[in-house]
Amino acid sequence: MSQKLIQVKDLKKYYNGGDVKALDGVTVDVYKGDVIAVIGPSGGGKSTFLRSLNLLETPTSGSIIFDGVDITGKKVDLPLHRQKMGMVFQHFNLFPNRTILDNLTMAPIKIKKMPKTEAEEKAMALLQRVGLADRANDWPAQLSGGQKQRVAIVRAMCMHPEILLLDEITAALDPEMVREVLDVVLSLAKAGSTMVIVTHEMNFARAIADRILFIENGAVVEQSDDPKAFFASPATDRAKAFLKSFDYE
Ligand code: ADP
Image (tube, rainbow, N blue to C red):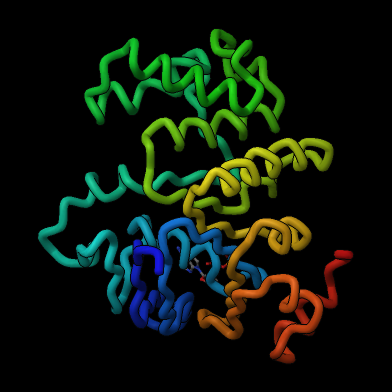
């Protein structure tokens, strides 16, 4: 049995004094090496769930045990825990006035106090893995959207996180650039990275995930550790209705 990395217990996140129940009692365990795809209709709570995992959203109630520590507790060293979780967003947010290599080494040098040469070596090795080693000295503006998103993934990996949280990372990309980004994520998954991925790419979710979480109205409506079976015949009417609107083989 692999090790439990995150334990989410009865997580609730309400907005507007409780009028909006973005998360209404989510309980999920994430094990080391898990690749979890979070899917469901827009507004269902997927992003809130992901952002709650590293406390970009403060839960209304419930707990998140990460590496044995309840990170929703008052005295927790939040920056330390956040370092262990790499997050990649829809928009890459690279610093435009820094080279690609600088963008990658800033956090390891500043936050992890890694020596510059070591940070650069590690960044170059990761850039190599995503096919962008020759762009290390370019400015972000010289890269395509797909390339920038690959750099953003590398930036997260440079901190050696225990888990990667990916929030709709291909949603803002031109269609022809989606594949190159998803291929990078697939290769990381194959190499054993633990990931929670919010995505609207159903073929990708089916191909990459060990587990599917179908979230709607702030709740996990269906959960499956057999993605192929889930996509072939979901158990709930809600998931069936949702999947009908997608064109996947
Ligand atoms: P999804 O990622 O599935 O599209 P979200 O997690 O973004 O869903 O949103 C879940 C619900 O919470 C939606 O009803 C959304 O409008 C609401 N919501 C999200 N963020 C906020 C916020 N900062 N203030 C108020 N409501 C919010």
